[in-house]
Image (cartoon, rainbow, N blue to C red; front, side, top):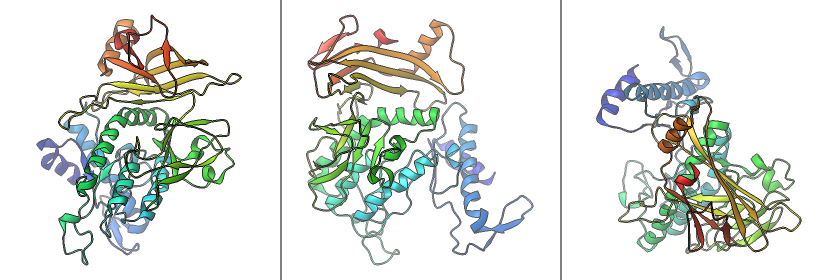
Length: 438
Protein backbone atom coordinates (compact mmCIF):
# COMPACT_ATOMS: atom_id res chain seq x y z
CA UNK A 1 0.00 0.00 0.00
CA UNK A 2 2.90 2.35 0.74
CA UNK A 3 4.39 1.86 -2.73
CA UNK A 4 1.03 2.09 -4.49
CA UNK A 5 0.08 5.27 -2.62
CA UNK A 6 3.36 7.01 -3.43
CA UNK A 7 3.27 5.96 -7.09
CA UNK A 8 -0.11 7.65 -7.40
CA UNK A 9 0.55 10.77 -5.34
CA UNK A 10 4.11 11.53 -6.48
CA UNK A 11 4.16 10.27 -10.08
CA UNK A 12 0.89 9.36 -11.74
CA UNK A 13 -1.03 12.39 -10.49
CA UNK A 14 1.61 14.54 -12.19
CA UNK A 15 1.08 12.90 -15.58
CA UNK A 16 3.58 10.03 -15.65
CA UNK A 17 2.69 7.59 -18.45
CA UNK A 18 4.48 4.60 -16.92
CA UNK A 19 6.41 3.38 -13.88
CA UNK A 20 10.00 2.10 -13.83
CA UNK A 21 11.01 0.07 -10.78
CA UNK A 22 14.82 0.18 -10.65
CA UNK A 23 17.19 -1.06 -7.92
CA UNK A 24 14.12 -2.82 -6.53
CA UNK A 25 15.69 -5.95 -5.08
CA UNK A 26 17.23 -6.24 -1.60
CA UNK A 27 20.79 -4.93 -1.95
CA UNK A 28 22.04 -7.08 0.91
CA UNK A 29 24.83 -9.53 0.15
CA UNK A 30 23.91 -12.19 2.68
CA UNK A 31 21.18 -14.51 1.46
CA UNK A 32 20.63 -15.61 5.08
CA UNK A 33 19.53 -12.15 6.24
CA UNK A 34 15.92 -12.08 7.35
CA UNK A 35 13.07 -9.96 6.03
CA UNK A 36 9.41 -9.57 6.92
CA UNK A 37 7.06 -11.45 4.62
CA UNK A 38 3.61 -11.03 6.20
CA UNK A 39 1.59 -8.26 7.81
CA UNK A 40 2.39 -9.96 11.14
CA UNK A 41 6.07 -9.37 10.37
CA UNK A 42 6.90 -13.08 10.07
CA UNK A 43 10.51 -13.45 8.97
CA UNK A 44 12.12 -15.48 6.18
CA UNK A 45 15.57 -15.51 4.54
CA UNK A 46 16.06 -12.90 1.81
CA UNK A 47 17.70 -15.45 -0.46
CA UNK A 48 14.75 -17.83 -0.19
CA UNK A 49 11.79 -15.51 -0.77
CA UNK A 50 12.73 -11.91 -0.12
CA UNK A 51 14.43 -10.95 -3.37
CA UNK A 52 11.70 -12.43 -5.55
CA UNK A 53 8.73 -11.37 -3.41
CA UNK A 54 9.87 -7.77 -3.03
CA UNK A 55 10.21 -7.17 -6.77
CA UNK A 56 7.02 -9.09 -7.57
CA UNK A 57 4.88 -7.22 -5.06
CA UNK A 58 6.31 -3.85 -6.10
CA UNK A 59 5.35 -4.73 -9.66
CA UNK A 60 1.81 -5.66 -8.61
CA UNK A 61 1.45 -2.44 -6.59
CA UNK A 62 2.71 -0.35 -9.53
CA UNK A 63 0.30 -2.06 -11.93
CA UNK A 64 -2.63 -1.58 -9.54
CA UNK A 65 -1.73 2.08 -9.10
CA UNK A 66 -1.89 2.69 -12.84
CA UNK A 67 -5.19 0.81 -13.13
CA UNK A 68 -6.66 2.85 -10.30
CA UNK A 69 -5.68 6.17 -11.86
CA UNK A 70 -6.90 5.24 -15.36
CA UNK A 71 -8.81 1.93 -15.68
CA UNK A 72 -8.97 2.25 -19.49
CA UNK A 73 -5.24 2.71 -20.05
CA UNK A 74 -2.93 -0.24 -20.55
CA UNK A 75 -0.41 -0.13 -17.63
CA UNK A 76 3.25 0.16 -18.57
CA UNK A 77 5.48 -1.00 -15.73
CA UNK A 78 9.21 -1.73 -16.11
CA UNK A 79 11.10 -3.74 -13.50
CA UNK A 80 14.80 -4.49 -13.14
CA UNK A 81 14.16 -7.74 -11.27
CA UNK A 82 11.45 -10.30 -10.74
CA UNK A 83 10.45 -13.93 -10.63
CA UNK A 84 8.26 -16.18 -12.76
CA UNK A 85 4.84 -14.59 -13.16
CA UNK A 86 5.97 -10.98 -12.90
CA UNK A 87 5.42 -10.51 -16.64
CA UNK A 88 1.69 -10.36 -15.88
CA UNK A 89 2.26 -7.00 -14.17
CA UNK A 90 5.59 -5.67 -15.46
CA UNK A 91 5.72 -5.50 -19.24
CA UNK A 92 9.44 -4.96 -19.64
CA UNK A 93 12.87 -5.67 -18.18
CA UNK A 94 16.49 -5.51 -19.27
CA UNK A 95 19.78 -7.31 -18.74
CA UNK A 96 20.87 -5.33 -15.69
CA UNK A 97 24.12 -3.40 -15.34
CA UNK A 98 25.89 -4.91 -18.34
CA UNK A 99 29.58 -4.33 -19.04
CA UNK A 100 30.82 -2.50 -22.11
CA UNK A 101 32.56 -5.18 -24.17
CA UNK A 102 32.21 -7.18 -27.37
CA UNK A 103 31.60 -10.30 -25.28
CA UNK A 104 28.68 -8.63 -23.49
CA UNK A 105 27.17 -7.57 -26.82
CA UNK A 106 27.19 -11.23 -27.88
CA UNK A 107 26.08 -12.93 -24.68
CA UNK A 108 23.29 -10.46 -23.90
CA UNK A 109 21.42 -12.15 -26.77
CA UNK A 110 20.89 -15.61 -25.19
CA UNK A 111 20.11 -13.84 -21.92
CA UNK A 112 17.31 -11.85 -23.59
CA UNK A 113 16.02 -14.90 -25.49
CA UNK A 114 15.85 -16.85 -22.23
CA UNK A 115 13.78 -14.08 -20.66
CA UNK A 116 11.39 -14.28 -23.60
CA UNK A 117 11.01 -18.04 -23.22
CA UNK A 118 10.25 -17.46 -19.52
CA UNK A 119 7.32 -15.21 -20.36
CA UNK A 120 9.01 -11.81 -20.12
CA UNK A 121 8.82 -11.05 -23.83
CA UNK A 122 9.80 -7.36 -23.80
CA UNK A 123 13.51 -7.11 -23.03
CA UNK A 124 16.82 -5.78 -24.24
CA UNK A 125 20.20 -4.72 -22.85
CA UNK A 126 21.48 -1.22 -22.23
CA UNK A 127 22.91 -0.40 -25.65
CA UNK A 128 26.61 0.46 -25.41
CA UNK A 129 26.96 -1.17 -21.99
CA UNK A 130 25.96 0.34 -18.66
CA UNK A 131 29.30 0.28 -16.88
CA UNK A 132 33.00 -0.36 -17.50
CA UNK A 133 35.21 1.25 -20.12
CA UNK A 134 34.11 3.99 -22.47
CA UNK A 135 32.47 2.43 -25.51
CA UNK A 136 34.40 2.66 -28.78
CA UNK A 137 32.70 4.12 -31.87
CA UNK A 138 32.71 0.76 -33.65
CA UNK A 139 31.26 -1.19 -30.73
CA UNK A 140 28.65 1.52 -30.17
CA UNK A 141 27.43 1.36 -33.78
CA UNK A 142 27.39 -2.46 -33.78
CA UNK A 143 25.37 -2.47 -30.55
CA UNK A 144 22.79 -0.07 -32.00
CA UNK A 145 22.59 -2.15 -35.18
CA UNK A 146 21.65 -5.17 -33.09
CA UNK A 147 19.57 -3.36 -30.47
CA UNK A 148 17.01 -1.97 -32.91
CA UNK A 149 15.76 -5.54 -33.49
CA UNK A 150 15.16 -6.35 -29.82
CA UNK A 151 11.87 -5.55 -28.07
CA UNK A 152 13.48 -2.99 -25.74
CA UNK A 153 15.87 -0.53 -27.37
CA UNK A 154 17.53 1.91 -24.97
CA UNK A 155 20.89 3.66 -25.30
CA UNK A 156 21.90 4.03 -21.66
CA UNK A 157 24.81 3.96 -19.22
CA UNK A 158 25.99 5.10 -15.82
CA UNK A 159 27.60 8.49 -15.34
CA UNK A 160 30.95 7.14 -14.13
CA UNK A 161 32.06 5.27 -17.24
CA UNK A 162 35.79 5.25 -17.78
CA UNK A 163 36.66 6.72 -14.36
CA UNK A 164 38.59 5.08 -11.55
CA UNK A 165 35.89 5.35 -8.89
CA UNK A 166 32.11 5.20 -8.84
CA UNK A 167 32.27 8.36 -6.72
CA UNK A 168 33.54 10.30 -9.75
CA UNK A 169 31.52 11.39 -12.77
CA UNK A 170 32.28 12.10 -16.42
CA UNK A 171 29.13 12.89 -18.33
CA UNK A 172 31.12 13.23 -21.55
CA UNK A 173 31.51 9.44 -21.56
CA UNK A 174 27.83 8.67 -20.99
CA UNK A 175 26.29 6.73 -23.88
CA UNK A 176 24.32 9.10 -26.10
CA UNK A 177 23.28 8.81 -29.77
CA UNK A 178 25.38 11.87 -30.68
CA UNK A 179 28.51 10.99 -28.69
CA UNK A 180 30.56 10.26 -31.84
CA UNK A 181 29.97 13.10 -34.34
CA UNK A 182 31.44 11.13 -37.24
CA UNK A 183 28.73 8.47 -36.80
CA UNK A 184 25.72 10.66 -35.98
CA UNK A 185 24.23 10.21 -39.47
CA UNK A 186 24.61 6.42 -39.20
CA UNK A 187 23.02 6.34 -35.74
CA UNK A 188 20.15 8.55 -36.87
CA UNK A 189 19.43 6.25 -39.82
CA UNK A 190 19.41 3.20 -37.54
CA UNK A 191 17.04 4.84 -35.07
CA UNK A 192 14.74 5.85 -37.92
CA UNK A 193 14.71 2.24 -39.11
CA UNK A 194 13.76 1.22 -35.59
CA UNK A 195 10.71 3.44 -35.92
CA UNK A 196 9.82 1.65 -39.16
CA UNK A 197 10.07 -1.67 -37.32
CA UNK A 198 7.57 -0.56 -34.68
CA UNK A 199 4.56 -1.91 -36.61
CA UNK A 200 6.22 -5.35 -36.67
CA UNK A 201 7.24 -5.17 -33.02
CA UNK A 202 3.74 -4.05 -32.00
CA UNK A 203 2.28 -6.98 -33.94
CA UNK A 204 4.64 -9.44 -32.25
CA UNK A 205 3.69 -8.14 -28.82
CA UNK A 206 0.04 -8.76 -29.71
CA UNK A 207 1.05 -12.30 -30.77
CA UNK A 208 2.74 -12.72 -27.39
CA UNK A 209 -0.51 -11.71 -25.67
CA UNK A 210 -2.70 -13.97 -27.82
CA UNK A 211 -0.49 -17.05 -28.12
CA UNK A 212 2.30 -16.66 -25.49
CA UNK A 213 4.99 -16.58 -28.19
CA UNK A 214 8.22 -14.65 -27.48
CA UNK A 215 8.89 -11.59 -29.63
CA UNK A 216 12.57 -12.46 -30.20
CA UNK A 217 13.04 -16.22 -30.51
CA UNK A 218 15.96 -18.67 -30.54
CA UNK A 219 16.28 -20.68 -33.74
CA UNK A 220 15.19 -23.85 -31.93
CA UNK A 221 11.79 -22.28 -31.20
CA UNK A 222 10.74 -22.87 -34.81
CA UNK A 223 13.40 -25.39 -35.88
CA UNK A 224 13.59 -27.82 -32.97
CA UNK A 225 14.48 -30.71 -35.30
CA UNK A 226 17.25 -28.83 -37.06
CA UNK A 227 20.39 -30.98 -36.61
CA UNK A 228 22.93 -28.15 -36.69
CA UNK A 229 24.34 -27.17 -33.29
CA UNK A 230 23.98 -23.49 -34.17
CA UNK A 231 20.26 -24.01 -34.18
CA UNK A 232 20.08 -26.32 -31.15
CA UNK A 233 22.85 -25.14 -28.83
CA UNK A 234 23.65 -21.55 -29.78
CA UNK A 235 21.45 -18.49 -29.63
CA UNK A 236 23.53 -15.71 -31.17
CA UNK A 237 21.47 -15.52 -34.34
CA UNK A 238 17.80 -15.10 -33.53
CA UNK A 239 14.38 -14.84 -35.10
CA UNK A 240 12.19 -11.76 -34.84
CA UNK A 241 8.82 -13.45 -35.03
CA UNK A 242 8.75 -16.42 -37.40
CA UNK A 243 9.80 -14.65 -40.61
CA UNK A 244 12.86 -12.52 -39.84
CA UNK A 245 16.39 -13.81 -39.11
CA UNK A 246 18.85 -11.39 -37.46
CA UNK A 247 22.64 -11.89 -37.42
CA UNK A 248 24.76 -9.51 -35.33
CA UNK A 249 28.45 -8.68 -35.64
CA UNK A 250 30.47 -9.44 -32.49
CA UNK A 251 34.11 -8.89 -33.45
CA UNK A 252 36.01 -5.62 -33.94
CA UNK A 253 37.19 -4.89 -37.46
CA UNK A 254 34.84 -7.42 -39.06
CA UNK A 255 33.27 -6.62 -42.42
CA UNK A 256 31.46 -9.95 -42.79
CA UNK A 257 29.74 -12.42 -40.47
CA UNK A 258 29.19 -16.17 -40.55
CA UNK A 259 25.45 -16.85 -40.67
CA UNK A 260 23.65 -20.15 -40.19
CA UNK A 261 20.36 -20.38 -42.07
CA UNK A 262 17.96 -22.70 -40.22
CA UNK A 263 15.46 -25.11 -41.75
CA UNK A 264 16.63 -27.60 -44.35
CA UNK A 265 13.67 -26.77 -46.62
CA UNK A 266 13.75 -23.02 -46.07
CA UNK A 267 15.16 -20.21 -48.20
CA UNK A 268 16.13 -16.83 -46.79
CA UNK A 269 16.27 -13.44 -48.56
CA UNK A 270 18.85 -10.81 -47.65
CA UNK A 271 16.81 -7.60 -47.28
CA UNK A 272 19.67 -5.55 -48.75
CA UNK A 273 21.19 -7.60 -51.56
CA UNK A 274 18.05 -9.72 -52.23
CA UNK A 275 20.35 -12.74 -52.46
CA UNK A 276 18.76 -16.07 -51.56
CA UNK A 277 20.40 -18.44 -49.06
CA UNK A 278 19.40 -22.07 -48.60
CA UNK A 279 18.38 -23.43 -45.22
CA UNK A 280 21.03 -25.62 -43.64
CA UNK A 281 23.90 -23.58 -45.11
CA UNK A 282 26.54 -21.60 -43.26
CA UNK A 283 27.66 -18.61 -45.30
CA UNK A 284 29.84 -15.56 -44.84
CA UNK A 285 27.66 -12.51 -45.46
CA UNK A 286 28.89 -8.99 -46.09
CA UNK A 287 28.46 -6.80 -42.98
CA UNK A 288 30.27 -3.47 -43.37
CA UNK A 289 30.11 -1.10 -40.45
CA UNK A 290 28.32 1.52 -42.52
CA UNK A 291 25.89 1.83 -45.41
CA UNK A 292 24.11 -1.52 -45.12
CA UNK A 293 20.32 -1.42 -45.28
CA UNK A 294 19.04 -2.52 -41.90
CA UNK A 295 22.49 -2.10 -40.31
CA UNK A 296 23.44 -5.78 -39.96
CA UNK A 297 22.56 -8.88 -42.01
CA UNK A 298 18.81 -9.45 -41.81
CA UNK A 299 16.88 -12.04 -43.79
CA UNK A 300 13.22 -12.80 -44.56
CA UNK A 301 11.90 -16.32 -44.92
CA UNK A 302 10.78 -17.45 -48.37
CA UNK A 303 7.03 -17.28 -49.08
CA UNK A 304 6.52 -14.76 -46.30
CA UNK A 305 7.25 -11.07 -45.98
CA UNK A 306 8.08 -8.04 -43.89
CA UNK A 307 5.77 -5.21 -42.83
CA UNK A 308 7.25 -1.80 -42.03
CA UNK A 309 5.82 1.62 -41.44
CA UNK A 310 6.78 4.50 -43.74
CA UNK A 311 10.31 5.85 -43.95
CA UNK A 312 9.45 9.55 -44.08
CA UNK A 313 10.67 11.83 -41.28
CA UNK A 314 10.34 15.61 -41.04
CA UNK A 315 12.18 17.62 -38.39
CA UNK A 316 12.62 14.51 -36.28
CA UNK A 317 8.93 13.53 -36.52
CA UNK A 318 8.00 10.17 -38.02
CA UNK A 319 5.34 11.39 -40.45
CA UNK A 320 5.25 7.96 -42.10
CA UNK A 321 4.16 6.32 -38.85
CA UNK A 322 0.74 5.31 -40.13
CA UNK A 323 1.89 4.09 -43.54
CA UNK A 324 2.07 0.33 -44.09
CA UNK A 325 4.65 -1.02 -46.52
CA UNK A 326 4.56 -4.77 -47.17
CA UNK A 327 7.49 -6.58 -48.82
CA UNK A 328 6.72 -10.09 -50.08
CA UNK A 329 9.34 -12.58 -51.21
CA UNK A 330 9.16 -15.74 -53.30
CA UNK A 331 11.83 -17.84 -54.96
CA UNK A 332 9.78 -19.47 -57.69
CA UNK A 333 9.92 -23.25 -57.63
CA UNK A 334 8.30 -25.04 -60.56
CA UNK A 335 7.66 -28.14 -58.49
CA UNK A 336 7.38 -26.60 -55.02
CA UNK A 337 5.22 -24.36 -52.89
CA UNK A 338 4.76 -20.83 -54.23
CA UNK A 339 2.01 -19.66 -51.89
CA UNK A 340 3.11 -16.45 -50.16
CA UNK A 341 1.46 -15.31 -46.92
CA UNK A 342 2.15 -12.54 -44.45
CA UNK A 343 0.09 -11.98 -41.30
CA UNK A 344 0.34 -9.13 -38.83
CA UNK A 345 -1.82 -7.62 -36.08
CA UNK A 346 -2.85 -4.07 -35.30
CA UNK A 347 -4.22 -2.83 -31.99
CA UNK A 348 -4.76 0.27 -29.92
CA UNK A 349 -1.44 1.41 -28.50
CA UNK A 350 -2.39 2.64 -25.05
CA UNK A 351 -6.05 1.94 -24.38
CA UNK A 352 -6.90 -1.30 -22.60
CA UNK A 353 -8.49 -3.36 -25.37
CA UNK A 354 -7.94 -7.03 -26.15
CA UNK A 355 -9.66 -7.02 -29.55
CA UNK A 356 -7.18 -6.77 -32.41
CA UNK A 357 -7.22 -6.46 -36.18
CA UNK A 358 -5.59 -9.37 -38.03
CA UNK A 359 -4.42 -8.59 -41.56
CA UNK A 360 -3.49 -11.36 -44.00
CA UNK A 361 -1.79 -10.67 -47.32
CA UNK A 362 -1.57 -13.54 -49.81
CA UNK A 363 0.16 -13.87 -53.16
CA UNK A 364 1.01 -16.60 -55.64
CA UNK A 365 4.51 -16.91 -57.00
CA UNK A 366 4.64 -17.19 -60.79
CA UNK A 367 7.65 -17.49 -63.12
CA UNK A 368 7.59 -13.82 -64.08
CA UNK A 369 6.16 -12.15 -60.95
CA UNK A 370 4.18 -12.51 -57.74
CA UNK A 371 0.42 -12.22 -58.13
CA UNK A 372 -1.32 -10.54 -55.20
CA UNK A 373 -4.53 -12.50 -54.57
CA UNK A 374 -5.98 -11.56 -51.16
CA UNK A 375 -5.83 -8.88 -48.49
CA UNK A 376 -8.15 -10.01 -45.71
CA UNK A 377 -9.02 -8.56 -42.31
CA UNK A 378 -10.73 -9.99 -39.26
CA UNK A 379 -11.11 -9.20 -35.59
CA UNK A 380 -9.45 -11.56 -33.11
CA UNK A 381 -9.48 -11.68 -29.32
CA UNK A 382 -8.42 -13.90 -26.46
CA UNK A 383 -10.85 -12.55 -23.86
CA UNK A 384 -13.50 -10.14 -25.12
CA UNK A 385 -16.55 -11.00 -27.21
CA UNK A 386 -16.21 -9.86 -30.82
CA UNK A 387 -19.23 -7.86 -32.06
CA UNK A 388 -21.73 -9.91 -34.04
CA UNK A 389 -23.29 -7.35 -36.37
CA UNK A 390 -21.43 -6.26 -39.51
CA UNK A 391 -21.91 -2.61 -38.58
CA UNK A 392 -20.28 -3.02 -35.16
CA UNK A 393 -17.47 -5.15 -36.61
CA UNK A 394 -16.70 -2.43 -39.16
CA UNK A 395 -16.86 0.26 -36.46
CA UNK A 396 -14.41 -1.69 -34.31
CA UNK A 397 -12.05 -2.23 -37.25
CA UNK A 398 -12.07 1.48 -38.02
CA UNK A 399 -11.29 2.27 -34.37
CA UNK A 400 -8.22 0.03 -34.45
CA UNK A 401 -7.01 0.76 -37.97
CA UNK A 402 -4.70 3.78 -38.08
CA UNK A 403 -3.54 3.45 -41.68
CA UNK A 404 -5.38 4.54 -44.83
CA UNK A 405 -3.65 2.25 -47.30
CA UNK A 406 -1.21 -0.62 -47.73
CA UNK A 407 1.62 -0.47 -50.27
CA UNK A 408 2.67 -3.96 -51.39
CA UNK A 409 6.09 -4.54 -52.97
CA UNK A 410 7.87 -7.57 -54.31
CA UNK A 411 11.10 -7.88 -52.35
CA UNK A 412 12.92 -9.72 -55.12
CA UNK A 413 10.47 -9.83 -58.04
CA UNK A 414 7.76 -7.65 -59.62
CA UNK A 415 4.33 -7.63 -58.00
CA UNK A 416 1.05 -7.79 -59.90
CA UNK A 417 -2.59 -8.18 -58.87
CA UNK A 418 -6.17 -8.50 -60.02
CA UNK A 419 -7.61 -5.10 -61.15
CA UNK A 420 -10.45 -5.21 -58.60
CA UNK A 421 -8.02 -5.57 -55.67
CA UNK A 422 -5.70 -2.64 -56.29
CA UNK A 423 -6.58 0.95 -55.43
CA UNK A 424 -3.73 2.15 -57.64
CA UNK A 425 -0.29 1.17 -58.89
CA UNK A 426 2.51 3.52 -57.91
CA UNK A 427 5.97 2.77 -59.24
CA UNK A 428 6.93 -0.72 -58.08
CA UNK A 429 4.14 -1.05 -55.51
CA UNK A 430 0.46 -1.89 -55.50
CA UNK A 431 -1.51 0.45 -53.25
CA UNK A 432 -4.64 -0.90 -51.59
CA UNK A 433 -7.03 1.47 -49.84
CA UNK A 434 -8.22 0.58 -46.37
CA UNK A 435 -11.78 0.99 -47.68
CA UNK A 436 -11.17 -2.04 -49.93
CA UNK A 437 -10.26 -4.38 -47.09
CA UNK A 438 -12.36 -3.40 -44.06
